[in-house]
Image (cartoon, rainbow over all chains, first blue to last red; front, side, top):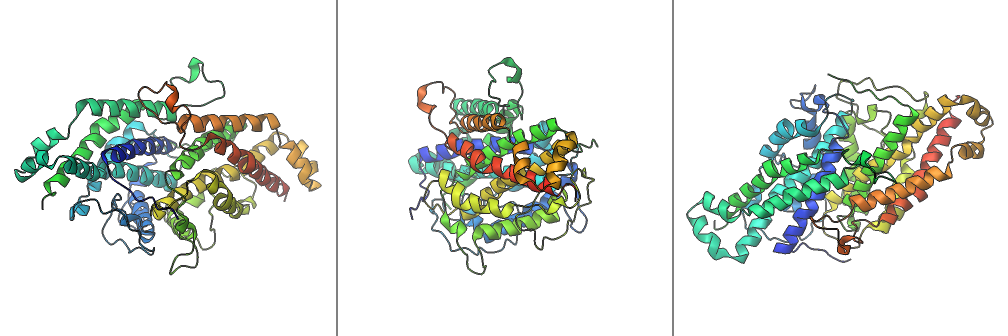
Length: 251
Length: 251
């Protein structure tokens, strides 16, 4: 059996982030299949939280038993009381600095997702498909979370490339200096443009003769939502994770 | 709150089938992110079946509690012992003929999916992401199952449009005659071409300047797999469901 162990280089990390864009765009489009279905987000009987909370905690428990969180690229939304894995463990590359596994900003992701992102691209209404809605929320939340926490790998790769640039800032706990070192406006601009283009290509209605104008402006998700998601949340939060990671890099 | 209750007409049924194509293509592309990861399909310790079986039965149980299978468009892979829904029930349109809910060919879907479809488009190898692999299998299996079992709605719409064409064949239990009445070669050909085109558009690598040749032939999933999937399995199995449904339509 061929093993395909992850290797982390600047190129592989960049490729993973670009591939994750696709998963996020598909996830937006799939979630937009359903209206807001607000009952998914309000408390359900016999459970002290929302249906989404119920579906996410219970599905994460199933996934934990199947070994999902053995991979350091995966971060659960509810890490408390996750059951152990039943699966023979796989030798995942231990690339990150010890102690940084606990960096987990899924609570912030959960909040902006429900309260700010969903209202931007989901229609009003209720079609009763709460379970399917929660399942598509979970899948999109996981893709977003993976993107943002991938910042740990980005930071480690960058640190290993030029520790001399980072060490003084880390020792000085200079968050602002680190953030500046990690910010490339032109790259961020390119990412935003690319995800907008992906949302157009992946979210178009396809017919066998659709080179006419009629389909050009009909997208399953407004492409500007993809760039807003990256501009407002994914890019800044990934950098927050990077800074947090680097601040613990010399512990 | 606006209710968006499903109405079933020839147009709405056609639109649902076309939208489901997108979910299936995204699902193929997402599954292709991982290599075959054969440990997902072999027996795991402390459980008498495969990891995929474990993830599917347990995730279906979570989804059943969240009310998924109250919607007659949804058919579980393991209907035995599903827990009851915890959610206030929604008045789903009761459109199908009584007694046809039990038509469920997910066992056949499960078999062709694992043994025939996966080897067509998934790379060899093992990257340890068995839980994520099983989750993406489940999501794709559900999209495929929904497409195929949607045949019940297609059949009911067609029956209501011209019962006089169907009733004699149903009374004669004439499977072949029914199959002939449901077969439109030119439509099937169009569907196969459209899903191939979708696989090209949704599975391309997108860069900000990719009008050059270099990207043209690089797809995340070979587009011919999408048309094979429809030709070999989805179209014939949807028709099998339609015939099975019609045979019970006058019960």
